[in-house]
Length: 277
Image 1: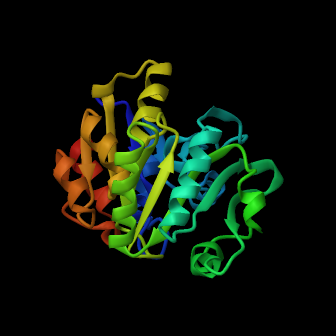
Image 2 (image 1 turned 90 degrees about the horizontal axis):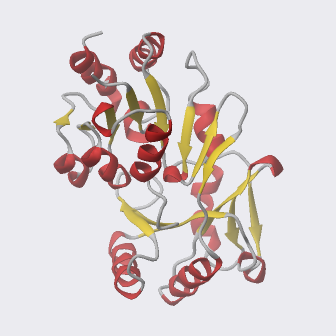
Image 3 (image 1 turned 45 degrees about the horizontal axis):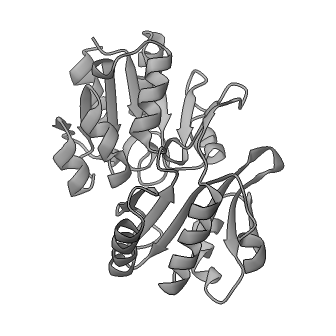
């Protein structure tokens, strides 16, 4: 019997317009009403995720920044947080500079109204689409101030696929086990994006920790997502579901691939078939 359903946002619960379809909303609300524990597991920062799911009937546990910060949307209380240590943070910035990449730094300064920080230099304008598509909860700072940041949840590096993939490979070889990381492909701001986080920070690791804390076993979890940051939870959950529009890696890890994509309420359709509600 399944008791917990972990749902990704972009490309999964959300359609291409970043909205929850009526069918998906009704399905999730019915599941909540039936007593299922519904958890949002997203790469988005907490504030953004909370705004996107506010039309659902219940407050939710939101695992934001790929599980590196977990809050209850009822009162914004932090349930768990995982930060990059200072040495790892500085090393990733220096390595990125050698590859002519500039990171967008996700920080836990929620109560100050700040979620992201970007360096003010000749390259920062490349990130304006990422920033302006969001609300104004970000800072643009000079390099010396970027290096002083703490409570860092993640650093993301959007860019051309080959550049990002080469950077990812370099970090993996030079700093094995120093970071939890992945290369995202199903994104709208660039060809690809590399994300570096605390080595204990991933959707699955945090999801499993949370499930254990409330007495739910791995085999009682359904996880559904679409991109490479969802692979671990799709692979390890009791039932792993990938969206039809998902990356090849996500689909290869899944027990089920949805018949419909995220623009045709694939999430609602597959959960109705699996759970028969």
